[in-house]
Length: 120
Image (cartoon, rainbow, N blue to C red; front, side):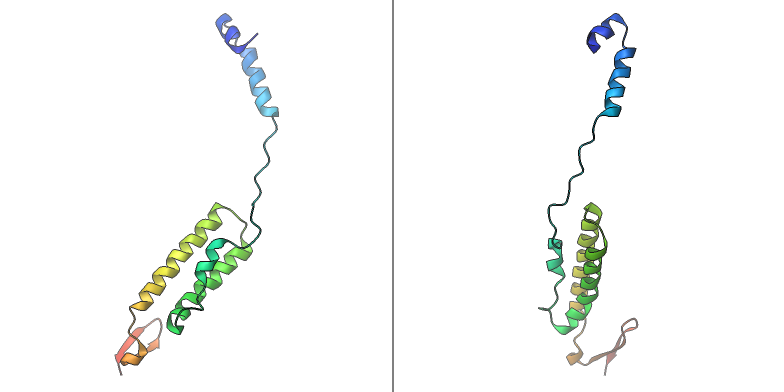
């Protein structure tokens, strides 16, 4: 007797119990495995060899951290999000460094955390 027939007769409880039992004992599908065994493609955007030294100095710590994340965290959505947001931060930091006065323009920097001192 089908679930609909039992419902029409008012005898749905055994069908629900059978349905719940079937759900409990069904086999779970296997978890998908990562298809790529190489490094994340986003890592290519952390290269800094092509940058001038002043910008490479800003970009290098972000690259180091990106590779550390790649080596230590398992593949997944959160790792991808971490790398993507780190790339956004690196891009912003490099753009900010573009606005710094160039040392050849008569500026000197005593301490990176203190900012620029002004003209020499």
